[in-house]
Length: 125
Figure: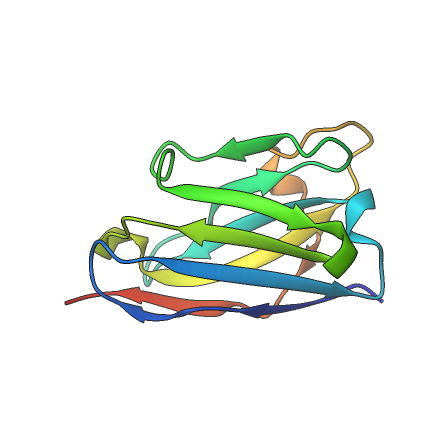
């Protein structure tokens, strides 16, 4: 059974940084695309970033380009989301998810079907 443990969320001031981790168990991470999503209060869940299987092609939402970096460590079966220059609008519950795309792609966010439990990120002064 595919499971994730997300960690690294917390309270940070605007302009600060956090690194989220998504550790997988029950499957080999490299065979799946992994996405990070967030859901702010009263808003729909949105795809923030993702990384493909294989060569690790990445994709970022326009709202986080240049500030967030996604990476994977296959030896640790973990995907990371480094978040810099955080803004109050980055606040939300962040989830990681997986999907076994046939190709090295990841940005079809509606296709993800295995989900973690989420970690809260709050950006506030």
